[in-house]
Image 1 (spheres, rainbow, N blue to C red):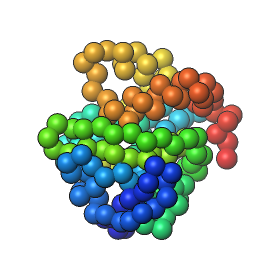
Image 2 (cartoon, helix red, strand yellow):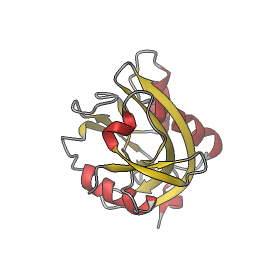
Image 3 (tube, helix red, strand yellow):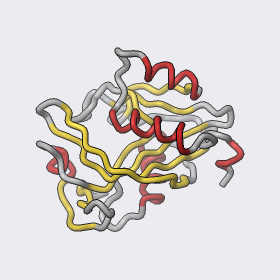
Length: 181
């Protein structure tokens, strides 16, 4: 796959293409991204610890899968592809909402993304790619909320933002019956 990301404007209209690394240097350049929340039939959410080799937020906990669609690739296809590549899971994804955020990671770089948030449901065995994921765990909604409240918790900023909105605007997003696709 391409190592390029799609640069977009605030309305998610593509305005160019940029090398993924360059898009994350300095203050970052606004580009299209997605985050998938994977939920099993017991209502537990898969969290992943980002691999040590990640440029930004390595070792931090986040939702199941975060990435960028390749130029010309639609979000749902990219999300399905990355779930398979990163976690070995085949699951259909359902779009919930999108939002723009900007988060700096010290002097290394930043995320400036128009992020599409999706949900997927699966009980498949997870086989993480070690280049992407160093550890996984399945947690309930209450367990995640409790961990996010701990001051020492190391979670990615986009996950924190998404979790708050999912709980407030999508109170039943993790109900298994809603994810039968």
